[in-house]
Image 1 (cartoon, rainbow, N blue to C red):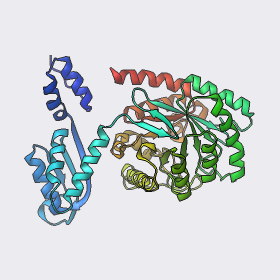
Image 2 (cartoon, helix red, strand yellow; image 1 turned 90 degrees about the vertical axis):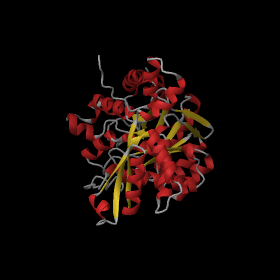
Image 3 (cartoon, helix red, strand yellow; image 1 turned 45 degrees about the horizontal axis):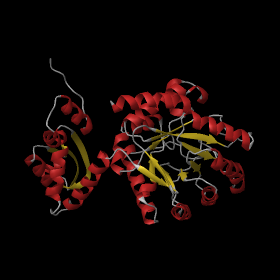
Image 4 (cartoon, helix red, strand yellow; image 1 turned 30 degrees about the vertical axis):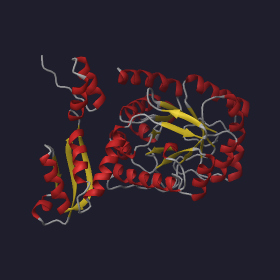
Length: 397
């Protein structure tokens, strides 16, 4: 019997080889040869492109370039490098001392390959350590707002009632609690600082004593973040990706973890005809720059989480493409958070209101986890924990 195996993970190749009793040394040599990657390099000189192609051909791979780059008619071209992990690693070594910008490509290629191979992270968050790997983590949405798009806000609850609700979420399987005092739904209006503090800080103070799960503050205001961290929060979930230097300073001072999210525009403007030439490529570049800004501000790499910002300045098609190509964000070598819960793109597909989008959310989160998400941010924790536990168990076999 002959079988075609669709294998894209070196660890799965290793498992298959062990199953037929391949020698350990042979596994180390052969497994990287069995997994092929397609690497895109943006706009290099036609000279560099031709060298790339010749070097990769010599290794048994190939490089796709624009026709004009081969004939000399084009001065610049993007390239698609095609090869196994072994071939790509050897290419990186061969390019290291080359001119025409190829040494820089070598360094970037090595970084991308390391990022793609990395699956597990330890996130440092204000003295706490949050481990990914083994199972997909759940960040539970706790809106202390009267205008949440999903109508699940706890603004009318007492602190005691809200704490009881959160304790239930932790019992259901939440790994992180994300407290938000200002809605970021499309067309949402900004909330005054004092009001956001009034909504969030008393609950965070109470939760610090009531639950062991790390607390995240969903805010873009430095003062809200400061007071939240002062009272027990460990993570800042910032929809503006720490663009405010004051926010970067607060996160650095408290040694907090931070979620860097992509958003096009502001909540009031983000859904006004959002357009991209390459939605995933542009979001990756935005997040790469956001990570660089954070590092320059003294925030350690181990404290940074990236979020492509599903629904924040994206059309239905953009959101679906991001989820389909989510693995490409692994090249950033940071934990990936995805928030699809009850969002409008699910409603556009299922034709259901927010409260009835549980099953659509489950589908999107399972596929996100399969494609590289380490954390999913959801409202319906119990259903998501059960679904992810099954999916994660299948992946571990």
